Amino acid sequence: MHTMYVAAIVVYSSYSAGKGFAIQIVYPANDMSNKQQYISICQANRQIPVFLQHWWMDAVCTDWDVAIAMNGDTVAGIWPYNKEQKAGVSLIRTPKLTPYQGTYVLYPPDLKAANRDSFEHETVSELIKQLPSANVWSMSLLPKQFQAGLYKHAGFTISAKQTFLIDLTQDEQALLASMKESLRRHIKSANGTLEITEDNAAVNLLFEYQKHTLDKKDVMQAYNLADMQRLMQACIDNYAGAIYVAKQGSDVLAAVWNVWDADNSYYLMGAQKQGNDNNKAMPALLWHCIQLAKQRGNKYFDLEGSMDTGVERFFRSFGGQRELYLTLKKNNSFIWKLKEMLRG
Image 1 (tube, one colour):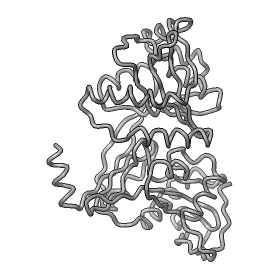
Image 2 (cartoon, rainbow, N blue to C red; image 1 turned 60 degrees about the vertical axis):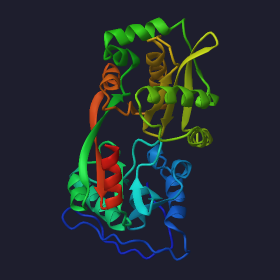
Image 3 (cartoon, rainbow, N blue to C red; image 1 turned 180 degrees about the vertical axis):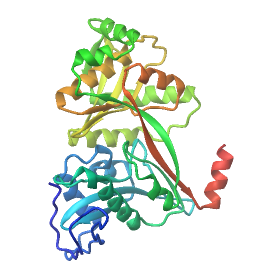
Image 4 (cartoon, helix red, strand yellow; image 1 turned 90 degrees about the horizontal axis):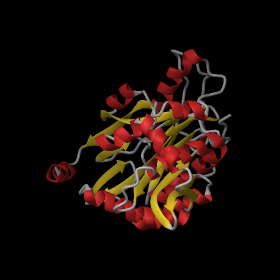
């Protein structure tokens, strides 16, 4: 159940397809802010994705808020969002170190399959109504968010990106069988030659390796070491993430940052040591994370995809299902349009 009782004024009629339900913004009598309510919502609904959890937002955002849609006294959906001000321009965009944001619908357990899309449509509509105005929007939604018409009607330009989802309901033998043969060989060869361990203090090393990788591609790093350390500590405090390293002797060849929630496990970030030509370290690390995700009871392992050809080829070799997810953009700022034009 996704029930949260608050002292509030709510207009509600039971849900039915075609008629919908009356949802109003809740006005708490006890002066609780939406953010304060949201902490309780997250604590009561552990299935809310890790990137939308209140503690994640605290770690990656300087300022954030949340839209909450209610179905009677029950939470129907949420949309936490990051708020920024740059050169007098108001922005709402996906925060640093965060692949997905946007809406999340909490479906009633007794909802009929025939009513699911209508419920989602009504909930997302209400969440959009509660959003503040901003000059610039840029946000990647979670996979399986399909209400594109509502976002377009709200003035967003919609495009798609891709990720790869590995179905963890398969046994390990089936997971290995779906991989490219060369990848299986690398994983098998890594056994006995590489040591895979959890090392959350390696966040410093991961930052260094990642910076070198991005520098080689002439890509600006959108976060600093303090950003990574703050988020890593939040993941540790909430039992929602770890860094795993592949070592040969005392030499750390590669590191992977893995985060998870009740349903899914995610490859957040990974990088190899400069000059390391060992092609076993990253496959071995990701296979280790996939095995742990299965043990944890996660349903999917999300490789978080890439539009980079080389990275996409590597992820595809794991045999996951290609999944598209929506990105929303809106730009009503002349200054920001000029900035993007100059950036190329």
